[in-house]
Length: 447
Image 1 (tube, rainbow, N blue to C red):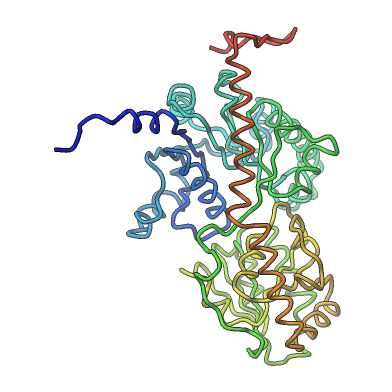
Image 2: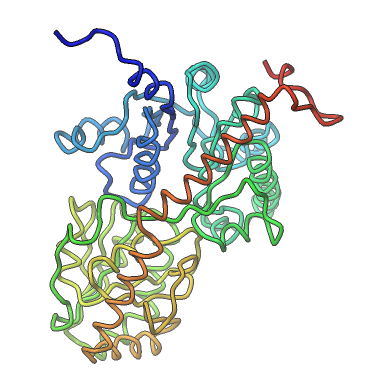
């Protein structure tokens, strides 16, 4: 009969295991989208250290329905031992309500949890035995400054997108109202301050690139900010065999979440200012627009543009990569790194992008991608792809770049530094020799 109690070796292994809580906007399986891919990449890293639980927002359409409809795929890829549903309070609809929320310490888009969910989170973080608490996005940290000092040292905030730069204006609809403009300026200052508090109060903060780190903190970056690159996780090389697109038709692919404002703005700019000339040069040209949750303006723009096909909410994007000759990334704003660029590189399709579209990636125009900034430079870039040696060289260089610099091993190496840093800070905090600097409360004051 099998032993009912673990051996000494097993006991040591269990005691050395780490336990992690992931706090996310959405339940990230199946991982079809960029946000889910990054969540699962980080979750799988922590699963290599021990048990991983997840707390996610059940009031988002992608929450419970996504989890319930995943079927066998969910069971196969699921790394979570425990699952907790959370709810957040609705954003105030009035300007006065939002201003009041900011005054209470929650600048938009930081959103407060319901009382029951906040109590659940505090109990989990303080008393759930977690070694690490990974919070995806700064907007999900509402109420965390009230945690004990020991608990805050376990918190890792994955900032991902730096919201206080070019992304900030995309959070709001355009307005000419002077009062609303004033509020947005005040809110931005408060959000910048909130961002700084996250860097200084919690164990560590993650960003996607060195540029984001510089933008977040400046030349003398805090030692608690770590660059953890995006990777494609389960979509590794060889798992998605593709043929060369060189001999294919003049089909371009735009891919991305079609409710995400940087994607929407970039796509609309491309359709209005770039695509018409490309279509004149190549009358049989087609643009495939693939993504989830398209906004009405995206649907309308695609419908009135000749040769543009909108494919919303597709189960798998791979077939669209197979059909296209090149991938276009016409972004004009944003931060982080573009998983769509990494994906295109591994799926053997050349990338034509604005500089902003590849920002944060260690790439060179003419080597890993072709850069454009208007209709003429786009057509010149695309014309270069008529040379098969140029086409193949771009594909090969981009794939090599991704495998060397944006692999799972690169993410693991970065996260190992984060974990070691937090462990060392916790050890210093618990050391009998540690002392509290003058003017700062002791650990006991938070318990």
